[in-house]
Length: 456
Image (cartoon, rainbow, N blue to C red):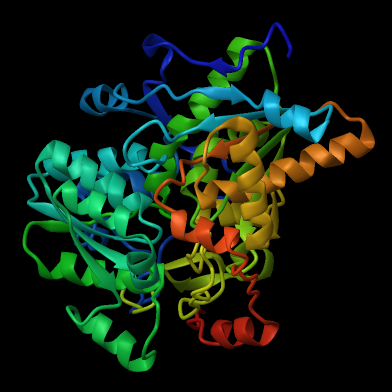
């Protein structure tokens, strides 16, 4: 153990960031705008405000303001579980016998078990401030739905959650936490919405996808007076709120006098990855420092590594705006055997632009190797990681083993998005040896991509 570096580094409450950081302000090439699916023209604030809360619309469209003040009410809520620790993985380093120094930013110190609460409380706050009755949303593995139900309970808002059907069935305890906090939870696709009925008619017996659940949640929000739709990933506003993760990580490293070489985040829609890398990417964009930034996605849903950079619908029902992103096609539904989370067909438009500009890397990993890494981490570091986080763990271990071969003493940091205590069905499948590594064929992806909207 390095006597100068503690196991855990905490910021004090006084050192906690008071502003969110907006990466777009420092991007030379701004992310492409959302387009109206009917006119193919950039969405206006007025059009977006039908679906989203007014102040969140302003955050979504703001490409120039670098720092945005965090309202005091949100800071007060953050203080219940923030600042979160930056942890040196000494035990993992020892087992790997690597010269690399491994750190992780642990976001599991709250009942929702993940980083999702950072944006959930912000979006719920702006909905409450606007005088709304409630919000609707989708959730995949259940972390976002759990976080939003907590935030809504705290602020006295109604919360309607459409949960991807395969997760609804595989993760009943996450579902029951949402219900305990007062949310209604509907398996998606469902017969309760028109878009759900259409999806079921087109895909009988489907296990669902985030794209399906988004369509249902948007339909209910638009059709219910006093409600708006909120989203746990992908959107610019979410990456903004999640920048609290990276800002704390940056400040903790500065406190230690350490500069990371490699920054790794799991990537589904982009909330955790975008939040973790934000201040480091800002330095990279401004030419102040350089880092290797690695996005890690599942081989079963590989939007960065095998998708197309194009405009696509954000949802399977094709009712949401079009976003330019790395996508597998809005009709792409991951195999039901994929138990490791990160099931969205596309990637944040901001992260997609950064990737297209060569400012970060992307790798895909198979889920049995992901759970092998999760098991090794649990046995050495004492935390059962969320399957989503375990994609980053897999890549961090791979990088540490590379350093073992080369002798490089690099400093690696990854985002531990949360805990996996509600994901035991997935762990059971791995432990029983029945987990498979389904990887979509080129033909399957090409078929889905062939249905992308035609944009002039």
